[in-house]
Image 1 (cartoon, rainbow, N blue to C red):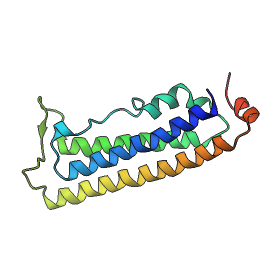
Image 2: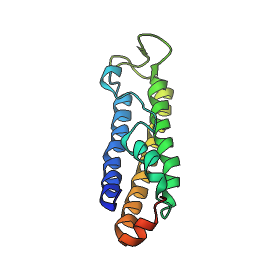
Image 3: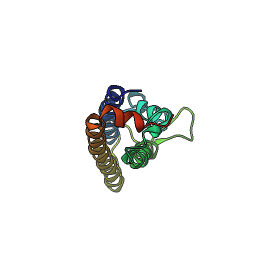
Image 4: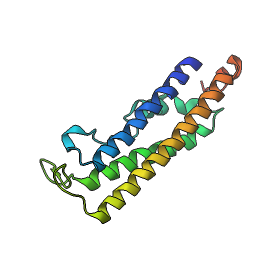
Length: 150
C-alpha cells in the first residue's frame, strides 16, 4: 500500500457516492425501479471494501473512523429512500410510485427531505475525503510508512 493508491481510492469514492444522489433524484422523478441502482451495503462499494481491508490500518489519520460512520449513513439514507418507494416484501417487487402516478404531496415532501439528508451527508463525506487526501499527500514517506500497522 502506498500513498498514490490511497489518494486514488479516496478520489474514486467521490463520484461513486455522488451517484447515489443522482439515483435518489431519479426516485423522486418517478423513474422505474428497473432503471435504478439497488442499494448495497456500505462494505460492498469500492471505498467500503478498501476501508475494511486497508483503510483501518492508517492510524495517523483518525478522521477515517469518522468517515466510516458518515459512509454508513449515506448508504442507509439511499436504502431508506429506495425502499420507502419500492416495496421489497413482494415478488416481483412492485413499484409504489411509478412515472405514471402522482406522489402524494406529504410523501413528496418526506422523500425530498430524505434526499436532502443524503445530499448533505454526501457533501460532508466529500469534504472529509478531500481533507484526508490532502493529509495523505502531505505526509512524508517515512511518516506515512510508520502510520501503518504491520
